Image (cartoon, rainbow, N blue to C red; front, side):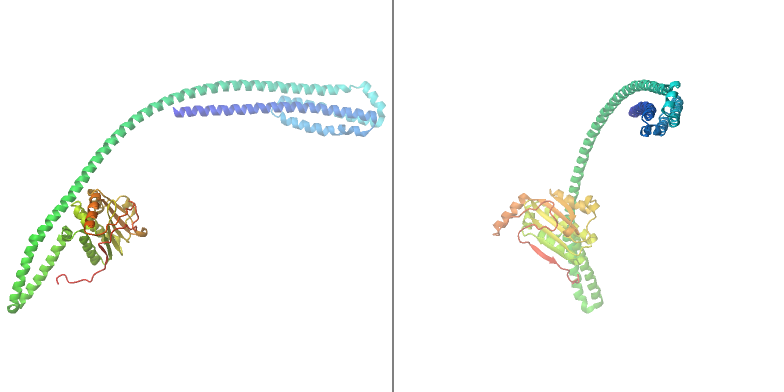
Length: 496
């Protein structure tokens, strides 16, 4: 219906354009008729002026009066040619024009002959000729022919005007009908659009309700998955802690007993059986390597320093091992109040922060190609702020927008488990990567500050920083527990 309405309006526009062209043509016909009448009257005036100037010459004998008579021929020919152009589409008028031209030429010939007679016989001869001749007959014929042509031109104009009026009236009626049909089609189209809009609104409402239900379901499932993930993290940490204790207690005791027995047997066989003593010594070296392997497994499962000396010592030891294994210097800066806050806070706080540091340094070792790393753990007004910054190649922008790595997801889940947040962005100078973790600890902050005050230390106010602070911004804090760069140590013999 929209296309039909558009076609109707286009047809109406074409009719309007046709009417405009017809009106323009009618106006041109009116102007043409007016010009034809003016030119015909001008021809009559030229002939009369020629005759009047000739009579003035006859009376005065002054040839100045012959100016119009001598130029009349050229002027009449020019006017005739112009009239032929104007009457090109009217054969009847062209025929009348030809007759008028003949009459004019005849009259002009008679005028020229009269002038010649005057030159030879004088005024008396002209008077005699005028007594017996009919001088007014030629002018009357010219005037009559001019009136006839003007009358025919007016009749042609009236016929064309009547035809144009009739055509315009028909076009007007047709245009009104076309507009009425277009209005009806528009009304019908509006009703169809209104119905379609109402149906679409109903569908959109139903779709919105479905989307809301789906979003609620997705949010519920996401929350369930998040809770499950956090539960699995807690269960995993508990299982690692239990397994590390069993390895440390049972396997450690067994390996220590074996080492003591091998040492005693070795001392007894050194004099009697040196070959067996050497084999036992090598076996003891293998045992020491096994003990070292057991220690590394236990440390990976649950760092013993974390339970014995606290989070600061565990992070400091791990960064030291990182520098030793990767040959990459690692600067560690940890506030002195951190251990007290961690002990008074959530039981999973220390292991969560340590695992985040561990996972971050593991990713740096595998992918970053960094030349220097810094680990900072400070206390702010809103809680703990942990930053791990490297100067490596950084993380790709698509990974920053949609981090789907299991390690990054694990770190984020650990931060969410404690009510905090994890942010990944560019490091210092838009180089490398900065991983920032913020853990809210209002109650723990007050407890830690009170404990420091009880120990006789001065508590300085800590200024918080915006959530989107740059990686190289510094958070003021108390004198750090550890501000030392871990240089690359000299390799040593693990058995020794």
